Length: 399
Ligand code: ADP
Image 1 (tube, rainbow, N blue to C red):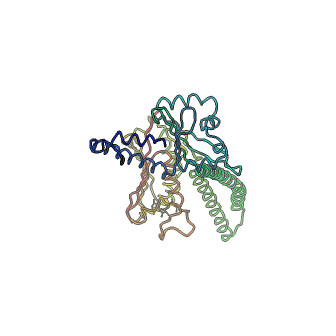
Image 2 (image 1 turned 60 degrees about the horizontal axis):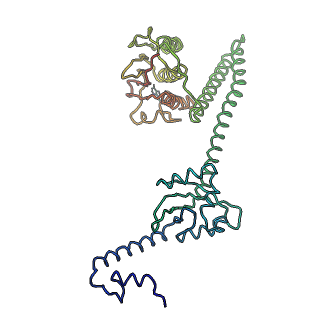
Image 3 (image 1 turned 30 degrees about the horizontal axis):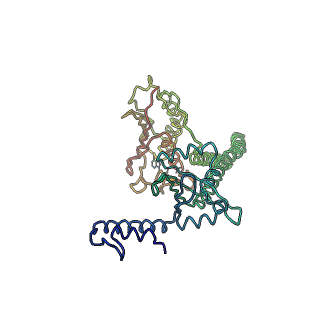
C-alpha cells in the first residue's frame, strides 16, 4: 500500500510512532505542535463564526469554505448552481466596475460589495454584504471573501425609509392643514369682529348689550391669538420656519414697539422706558426683524399683563459678539419653582392676577423656539413681588 506523504513527513521531521529522529528535534516538534494547534484554532474560528468565509483562487475556483457558507450557497439559487464564485459575483456587479474592483483587491485593498441573490424556492431576494481581500493560500494568490446575510437589515432600512417619508409627508400635510384652517377660521372671525365693532356703535344700546359685545370681541381676539400661536408652534416643529435676515435699525424697531404699547401702559399707569446702551440711530444690524418683533411683543405683552405699578424697561446692548435684549418689569415676579417651567408649552403660573382662560401658556415656548432658531439663548431672572427681567441674546451680525 502506498504510504501517505504525512507518514513520510513525520518520519523525517521526527514525529509519529515510527520516527527515526524523534529525540533529536524537540524544538522542531514543539513548533509543529504549536502550528497544528494554531491551524486547529483557525478552523474552529472559521466554522463557528456566523459570517460566511470562502477562499477561492483568482479564477474563481473555491479552495475552502466554512459551514455557514455552505448553508448560504444552498439557500441561493445562483450560488448553488456553480462552483465558480467569480462568475456569480461578476454577474452581480455592473459590468463597467468589474476590472476596477479586482485590480483594487489584487493590489492589497479590501473592497466591500453589496450583492443580491435569488432565494431558492421562492421569488425573495437575499442581500449579502461581501468583503473581498487578497491572501496567499499555499504559495498562491487567492481571494478571501467574508459574506454576511444583511437581508433583514436591508428590509428594515427600506421600511424605516418609507416610514420616515410617510411621517414627513404627514407633517407637511399637518402644517398645510393648520395653515388652511387658520385661514378658514380667520375669515369668518374677521367678519364676526367687524360686525361686532359696527354693532358696538349702534345708537341707544343698553349697557348689558355693550358688555356682551365686549365679551364677544375679547373672546374672538383670544381665539385668533390662539390659532396664530398653534400655527407658529407647528411651523417651528416641522422645521418650515426659516430666518430672513435684513439690515434693521434698532432704534426704529424699539421706538415702533414703544408707540404700539405706550397707550396700553398709560391706561395701566405704568411707564415704558427705552434704554440707550448702544448708538442705536447710527446702527444697523442683520436680524430677522419680524421674529425679533414677535419675541419682544410677547415679552412686553407679558410684562404689561403682570405689572400693576412701576415701569417696564426695554433695551438692547452688545457683548462678546452678541446682541442682548431685555424686557424688565416691576410686576408680580415669578417664584423659584415656576421659573424653571415658564418656557414649557402650556405652562401657566397659578396666580391671583390671571383669570382662567387668560393666555394659553404658549407665548414663552414660542418665544424660546424663535430665539433658538436664531442661534440665541433666552433666560429669566425674577423675584416674587419685585419683578422680572427676560433676557435674550442672538449673534451680533453687522452689515
Ligand atoms: P401666557 O399665554 O399664559 O402668558 P406665556 O408662555 O407667555 O403664556 O407665559 C407663561 C407663564 O409665565 C405665564 O402664565 C405667567 O405666569 C408667567 N410669566 C410670563 N411672563 C411673566 C412676567 N413678566 N411676570 C410674571 N410672570 C410671567
